[in-house]
Image 1: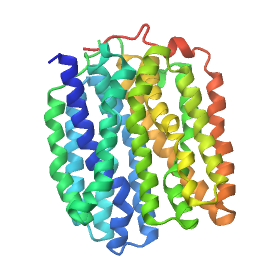
Image 2: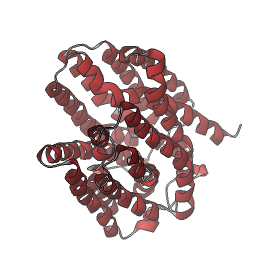
Image 3: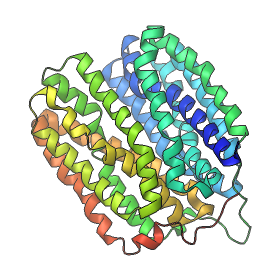
Image 4: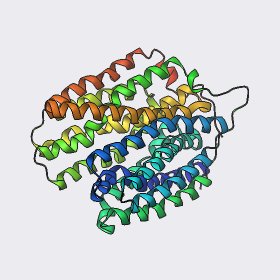
Length: 388
């Protein structure tokens, strides 16, 4: 088998396992806490702690990876820490237990979320970054759908799902060990996260405004559907639709990014995000809520691929882990801020007003893209340092 094709399949297996197991936190975290008698107030505090840690630890892991080029060791450490977190989460039944879980998740999740895409780019360089990322990441979507739709049918309870996930996750270490670390940077070319190009800071500001909308296409979207009278089955179908759309669109968009560059994909994607909220605000029948989800093709899949490629090319190989982990931290910060804003607006006004106002606010991210003057040269494969 061609060595790069072999590495592609290793990354596919790794992505499937990691998203399949760690996605359990996203879907069932609050449910598990509530089932164990934790009040809504404490649930909010615990989730705020873990998200705050994610914001702080992401850049730390990224800078360490860029400084040492030990991507694999950092990933393996994260996998082991999160495996412990899954077991702890399974048996947690008090506020103190869930606080420890929050610490484990907050510290170690950021060591996988940003480092794995950077390692993938390093191992699929000649394939084309868009094609490489779009070729392995859909298997993560398959893993997420497996966890959210199949696991409950097999195991019947969150505790059993978490224990199984804690046993499954370490298997991804086998795939990580067979991949290649990037070439270690020379001492005379230090990688400093605060010395990024001007376009980097503009893009991060644009991303922050775009991230403000994300709670409105996941949590608050589902709550709105329920408020309109949707059944749990319909809510589950709508959630599963986003995974299916990502699965079919990621490879296509990856090839588009390689052949045509990232500029127009990013412009379309950043415009799709506020448009998605705006369309949702005018739908009053739950059976038609699948319509705004069609924009997931660009609003998430397109933006995900183009962002990974753009940031990697913009900052260069020696700082890509720093850039990608900073972006993950910014996403967490944006979603936390967006959640607070949306919760206040829904309680004070209506869902429709909230969606419309947040569409306008997130649209600022689209406008900021026009401030990036050097888009094409920054977002193509020209002049990017090679990695081994």
